[in-house]
Image 1 (cartoon, rainbow, N blue to C red):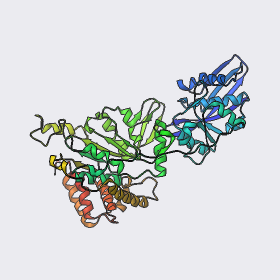
Image 2: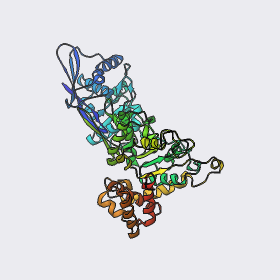
Image 3: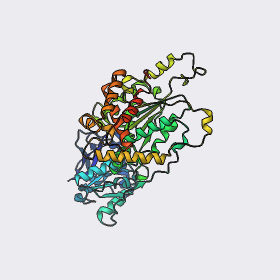
Image 4: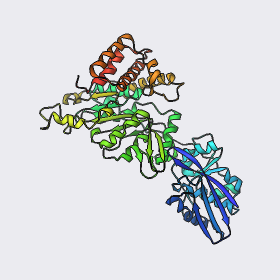
Length: 504
């Protein structure tokens, strides 16, 4: 008899259905798992054997063969333990085969038969919903999987509970979705003394998801400004929360099995490897660019990152997705993030201060900032110089708008963009608009177009830079609740492209 169970194999954020076939036949006693399993899957037979022994279930003295179909798809991870155990129990007549075949299962077994939480419960629930099956998973993973309301999710604590559930002795209740409430964010934008232009740029960047580069000496407040961004961004919408949580589920970052509405804020160290930033390693796991999807990726000490890592950012920043290529697979992850980079003007950081600059000034500034290539620099919509703050300004009381005031304006601008792009599949914010759509929504007035033409001719603005200026101008108009892009919006948008250029 051949019994069937179902589970999933992960290819990026996609979960592909895998059929677990178990055959018990006469022959020399053996327990074999075939179908391109990795080491963790091959070792499942020992964990399953020990768990069944703990439940006083003896395996028959026959040849047991478990096939994972499709056989040419690599199978990785310990979550195959539970479906293998279910297929085996159905094959020896302990569980009803028809009930097992209606379930997608995943979970790791301890030697005592307990179910250990695994990664990827949320994508697995989506795959189960598409297949019209129930999802069975460890109880600790049920809260995140239950967010997919299109299918029933059953969370169990042990293999014994699963057996009692299928036998009808003690049915398990469906899991309930969990939500992790974000902690109160105490970093207010009013805490930053001075730097009004940088604050304005921060507001524009958050409103339209425009990439921002902050350049200034040490201690001028670059990192302090970036740390205030989470308090300015609106919470994730339900579709965005699901997208982001699927990636975090694969990375094991969902706390308490719940989904958070707070936007991710990732700040990797400048010694991080390319696999850590872009993704890769064992199993082609998501990198920081994907973990920051729908949120913020903050790269402090930007020129200190390896040049190869910086150059690999060019394609994800432009396309909103990253492909991790391996010899046997190409895994694609979404990565629409707001890139905020901070840099010192030179290695010593005091290029503009003749009394404190090093002996290599001013050539050291060109050498240091030269680590950022022109094509990568061209992808920053906003470039802002952050000057040092005078000592006497630090004693002044807080000034300017609070984070709550700025967040309200940002929410209003994003609401206008949501209405504008309601009928578009790819565009969500102004940073996504391109082609004819961008020309329609960001058509400037005659004066604004004349200004843009003069600036483009003066500084040799690239086609990419031209379009990015239009996007920023559209966001400025949204912040002003203006239906049309006017000359003041265009002038301010252009000023952020000039901030670090030699023409100023």
